[in-house]
Length: 64
Image 1 (cartoon, rainbow, N blue to C red):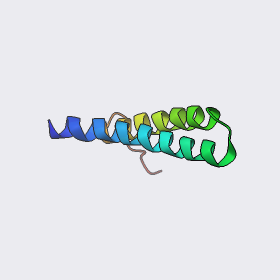
Image 2 (image 1 turned 120 degrees about the vertical axis):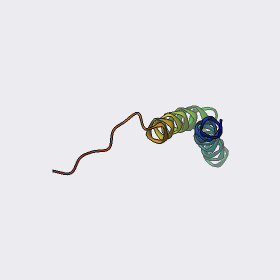
Image 3 (image 1 turned 90 degrees about the horizontal axis):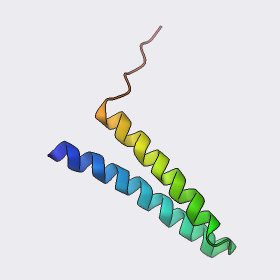
Image 4 (image 1 turned 45 degrees about the horizontal axis):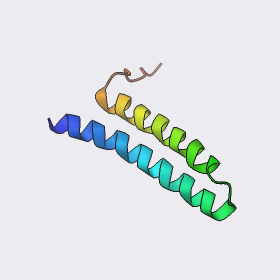
């Protein structure tokens, strides 16, 4: 159960950070809603990547 909470919190944190950064860029540059959309998607991708890495789905690279 703890691992599930950790994985879900990593996904939510990535999306939230991306959305906040996008909102901030929109406020500074008056580009609403494009910054929010772009950084929301980047945050989602980063969150999924963190979840995949934490879950151990991707094997570690072997040194040559």
